[in-house]
Length: 398
Ligand SMILES: Cc1cc2nc3c(=O)[nH]c(=O)nc-3n(C[C@H](O)[C@H](O)[C@H](O)COP(=O)(O)O)c2cc1C
Image (tube, rainbow, N blue to C red; front, side, top):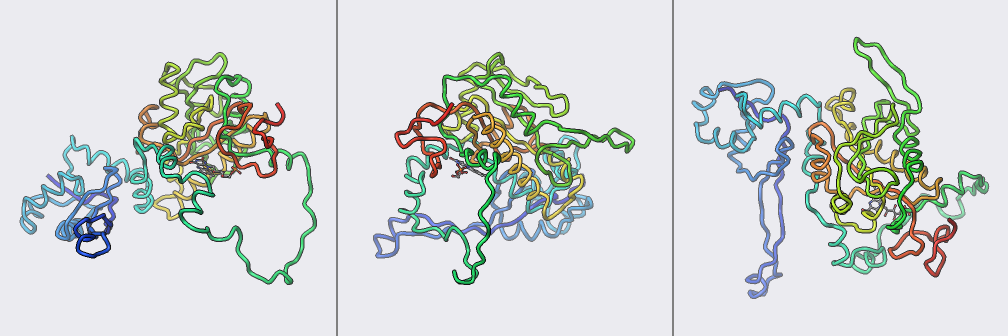
C-alpha cells in the first residue's frame, strides 16, 4: 500500500477552562485549565486529538506524492502509521478507503486549507441555539448589555465635531420608502399561506436568471445574470426550499432552477415533517420556522473555486455572495408587503441531509424565509421608526 498525508490539516493547541471544586475548596479560583492538541480535519469534518509525536510523524509524510508504506514503516514503525491511517490523518491508496475518496474530492474542489477547516468544522448538527439564548437571557440587546457591558460604539470617530463636513439632505424616492419598510420579520402569520405568484416573484427576483450568456469552451458554459452581484460572475449559490404553506404546492422540499424558473421536487413531506425540519434548520428559532417558505442558500464550492483556486479570498467571496442574495430577498419580499429574514444560525448538516446534498460539493451558508406578517407583533423586531408596527403591537398597512 502507498500512503500520503490528507490534503487539508491544521493543528490547534487548545486551552479550555473547567470548573474545579477541589481548586475552590483549596482557596483557588475554582477553575482548572485543560490543554489539548487537536487536528482539525476538514475531510472528516471533525477535530481529532493528537500527540506531539503524531504531529511530528505527519509532518514527515508528504501530502502531494504517495510514499510506500513499507519504506515509511522502516523509519517510523508500523503501528504509528496504522494508527494515523485509522484516524484519517494519513490516507491510503486502497480503492475502498472512504478517507481516500473524501480527501480526493476535497483536493479536486481547490479549497484553501484555512477556509476548508473553517467551513467543515463550523457546521452545526442538532444545535438549538434559539432555545439556548432564550434560557440564558441573551436575546435582546438590552439583555446582552446587562451581561456583557456596553458594545463598541455604533460608528468610529476620526475628527472633532467642528471638523465634520455636513452633507446635503439625502433624496427620498420610492426606493427609500421600500428600504425603510425592510425589517427582519420574526412574526409570520401561521394561518396565511403564501400565494404561488408571490413565491414565484421573489424567487425570480432573487435567484432567477435575468439573462444568460453561453460561452463555447467545448461544452456549453452558461453564465447567469442575477439581480445581485457575484464574485467572478459565477453565481454558485442555489436555492433549496422548505415549503410549508404555499397555495397549490404540496409541502416538502424543492430546488429552484434559475434559467427555467421552475421548481424541482426533491421530497414530499407532511405538514408536520416540513415544520419539524424548518425548526431544526434554523436551530430552533421558532419565530423564523413559522415562515411559510424557508430557503437554504447553498454554495457549490467547485464552481466558485474553479476560478478562485486555493485562494485566500474564495470562501469570503462565497459568504458575501450569499449576503447579497439575502438582501435582495429582503427587498423583493418587502416590495410585495411580505416579511423576510436571514440567519446563519443554521444546522447545515441536517439541512444538507434532508435535501440529499453532498457537503463536499454544496454547502449551506444561510437560511432565509419570507411570508405574510402576523396581524400582531409577539416577538421583537427592530422597527424604531414605527414603519411596520404600531406601539400597541398591531401591524400597519396590509
Ligand atoms: C448574517 C445575518 C445573520 C442573522 N442571524 C440572525 C439570527 O440568527 N437570529 C435573528 O433573530 N436575527 C438574525 N439576523 C437579523 C438581525 O438580527 C437583524 O438584521 C438586526 O437585528 C437588524 O434588524 P433589521 O434587519 O430589522 O434592520 C441576522 C442578520 C444577518 C445579516
